[in-house]
Amino acid sequence: DETSVYVETPLDHGADAATLNVPYDRLSCGSASAAGLGDIELGFQHSIHHTPTSRLSLSALAIVPGGGANADPAISYGSFGAELGVRESIGFPIFSRYGWLDTAVGARAYSGSPATRLRGAATLGCPVSPTVTLFERFDFTQSLGAANLAVASNPTISLRYDDRESETG
Image (cartoon, rainbow, N blue to C red):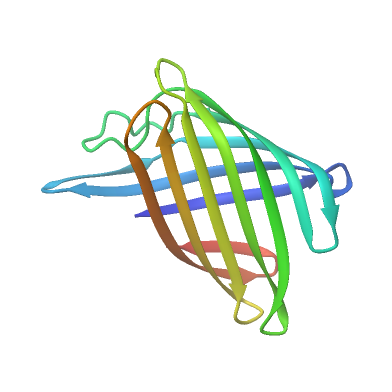
């Protein structure tokens, strides 16, 4: 179970954006459980093409260990890393408001790790009222050169108050 604080702020009249993602994870595996900060992501996105309802961006992330690597089960990798990728955001009318679909794919590498990871995500946001937005996020990770594939879904409800947002999921 993960709760994240995600901040995205436009730079340079909206062509670029800075991002911050701070996840707090709660994991359990059998009788073992752990909770703490996951890998913290500091990002930059540069728009390379946009229309009134879509945006294509290049993204770069710096990954800072959150401190949960020594937990049992481990919450983070405990290593610095970086990710380069592409993100497409599409807006669409729904329930007399605008929803969106964000898709992203990138290659992530950690210091000291022999395998680069191919990562992808799709996030669907549907506003059901001026203050409530429903999210569904699908993530996948594939270690290149390895035979394991991890796929996850994270349903989330977002409550918006005066342009402030909090999520639970």
